[in-house]
Length: 404
Image 1 (cartoon, rainbow, N blue to C red):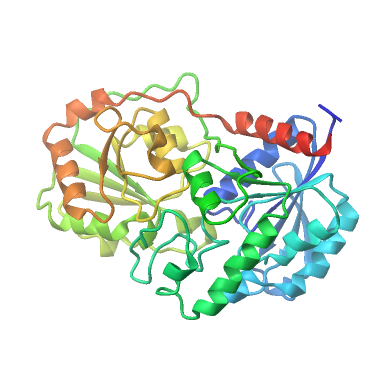
Image 2 (image 1 turned 45 degrees about the vertical axis):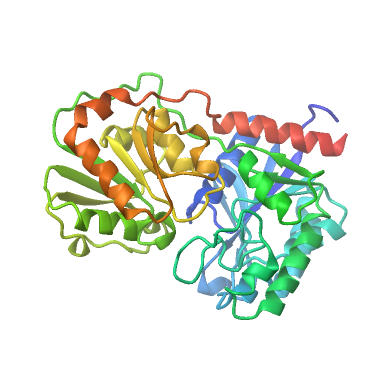
């Protein structure tokens, strides 16, 4: 079957128009690129729509692809995000109608692991991409209740027992996750770092592979516009402790000066939720709150900032935003470690700081504000980051290998 057209079902908790999060971007872009290669691509997603309560199905089209949306029940606990047995029958119906050659699961919180189990029971080649720690961590990002990184480099139930409300239930969840994932034909991670974390957490290393996320590259004629004004910082992520919003605010509190701009992207606006309000950002510099940029507006957004602030408080599996920035010659201040730092070089295109290091963030921002021209000129665009087309070509090869 090498090189033949495949019928592919891609499953992710969100999909356009309900676009949110890195896993969703990857699912959307790779689905579109796989279809462009000539494969028949279907998408299954969840949707928070009262009229679709109880797992009812709705068909629509997005990006030229047929999308099957299932009414996603509200999950009021980690257990409800993990188990959704009522959706299993719907998954069987979808598999019977679509008859896919392969099913690729991305983020499935609130859709439930039963969807993966049903696919495996049907004998269909099954792939799961682990974009974060959700399968093994109730908090999804390996952070404690106070928002700080738990410090684990592989996930151990005995350590998690100090963090979760029911250690025994969490241990059973980890055991079930290992069993489900190890029955998959392939488990993918977006970086070598994350493949190591997941392998150390119990996923069979014989089935783990790395499929680096693609990124939208700048247009061929993209050139940064010469600019001589005050330094322009950018922060992308919304009011969430995971992305380091507290560290940004604390650093600004310790910088009593006005010679800067801060452009804040509230990523949650794509879900119709506003988490950042300009009234809460009363600092001497010029603060702007802007909606999430689109693929079409990405070059414009990054041309409008000089430095990206990325003080993430978990060891990211990849980091799309960081790569979007460095591709366009934008300097990055980021926490060191994890998959984020793979394409960052301290002093070359980035300033790397420690986790929860407000002083380090403040000092890095101050150094750049003191010498803005140096940092505008020093950032070297990285050209070795794959495109989404590259990623989709690699995925097609992986799928094909399971069918031949």
